[in-house]
Image (cartoon, rainbow over all chains, first blue to last red; front, side):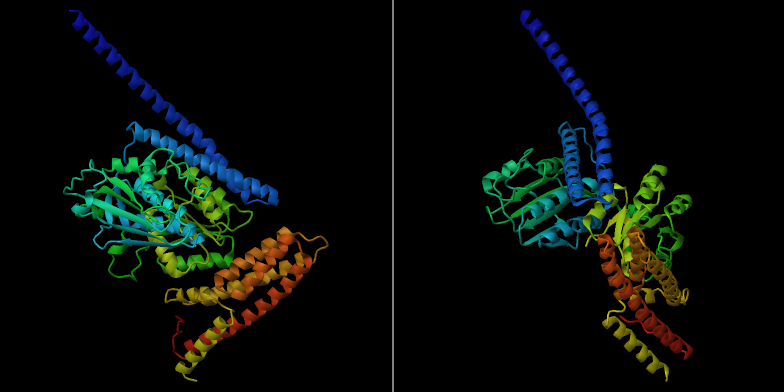
Length: 425
Length: 151
C-alpha cells in the first residue's frame, strides 16, 4: 500500500512540476514577446535618429562619436534579435514562415548584399546555380536567406584574400548522407527536394578539433589575429537550428588552419506545383518577347526637385510603358500619393527636402505593406551609409543615379517580383 | 549632302564629343528614349537643361557677388546644376560642379569664383556642341533619314 501511495505521490509531484515548468515557459515567452517589442522600439529610434544625425553638419569629432553610436546600436540590435531568435528556437516556439518564393533570386540578393564587403577586402565572389535547380520553391524565404547570408558572411569575415564560391544544386541521395552525422536521415518525397548549398573560401581555415564547437552558442574563434571580429557568436548556432527546422543538416570541412573552409548545408524545400505558377502575378521571365513591356499602365510616382533629372526619370519610365506622375517636393508628394501608385521613386539628394521623412510618413499612413507603393530612393551618393539610412527609413530599394534604360528595366522587374531592390557598387 | 553623309557626319561629331569628355553615356541613354511616341524627347530635355542652367548660373553669380556669401545657398545651386548636368550626360560640367561643391564646403571664395568661371566656360562649350548636334539631327530628319544611335 505504502509503495503505491508513494508512487501516486510521486506522480502528482511530477505532474505539478511539469505544469509549473510549462507555466514558466509561457511566462518567459510572454516576457520575451513584450521585451521584444519594448527593446526594439527604442533601438529603432536610436538607429534611425543617429543615421539622420550623420547626415547633418557635424564637426569631425562629433562625426566620430555618431559613428560609434551607430555601430554600437547596430551591434546591440543584432544581439537582441539573435538572443530572441535563439530562445524561440530553443523552446520550439518558432515556426517557419512558409511561402512560395523565387529561389534563384535569393542567391542573387545574397550576392548583391555581400559584394560590396567582399570588394573592399578584394575577395572574388562567385555564385553558381545548377541548371536543374528549380526557380521557385516553397519554404521560409527570409530564414533561408539569413542562413546563406550568415554562412557566406563568415566566409568573407575569415578570408583575407582569395575567392569565395557559392554553389547550389539539388542534393542527390548519395550526397545526402554524411558520415559525420549518422542521425541525419533525409527522407526524399514527392513534392519536396533537398537544396544543397556549398560555400567555399580560401581563408584562415579551422583546425579539425574546433569544428564541432562551431555550432555552440557564443562560440568565437580565438585563433585569429583578426581581433575585430564583430559578431555575437550566435550566427551559426541559429543557422543550425533553422536548418534543423527545415529538416536539414549543416557541416563544415577544413583541412586546417590557413587552408580555407567549406561549409555545406542541405535543407528540404517544397516543389512548386504547376498550377501555383499562375498565382505569380508578375513573372517577367515567362515572357517570350524581351522587348515587350510588361509594365504597361504601371502607375508610378516620381519625386525630384530637379527639373531635368525629373524629366529624364519620367522619360525612362514612360519609355518602359509606365503611367508616370511627377512631383517636385515632399509636400506635393504626400498630397498626391495613393494606393494606386505601385512604386514611388524619390530623389534623396535633395538637401532641405527630406526624402527619408517622406518615406517614414508614407509608411505611417499606409499600414499594410501591400497597400502602399514600393519606396525606392534615387541617390547619387555611392556611400554604403546611404543604403543603411534608406533601409532604416523603411525604403524598399535604393538605386544609384544616373539610371540607364537597362538598369531601370531590371530594377522594375526585380521590384515587382521581389518587392525589394538594393543596388550596391 | 545625302542622308548617308549627313548621318556619318553626325556619328563622327557625336563620337568626338564623347572622346573629348563633353558628353558621357547618360546622353546615349536619353537618345534611346526618343521614339515615335516621344519624337522630340532629346530636344525637349536639352532645352530644359539650357533654361535650368542659365537660371542657376545667374543665381550663382549673384550669390557669390554678395558682401557676405551664403555658402549654403551657393552649394544648393551647384548641387542642382550637378544633378541636371549628370542627368543629361554633360560630363565636364558635372565634374566642375563636384569641385565647386568642395570649395563651398571649405567656404573658399577664391576657389568658388574660379569654379564659377570654369563652369560657365564648360557650360557654354557644351551648349554650343549640343546645339550643333541637334542641328545635324534636324538636317538628317529633313533629308528623310533617321538618327543613327551610337552603341
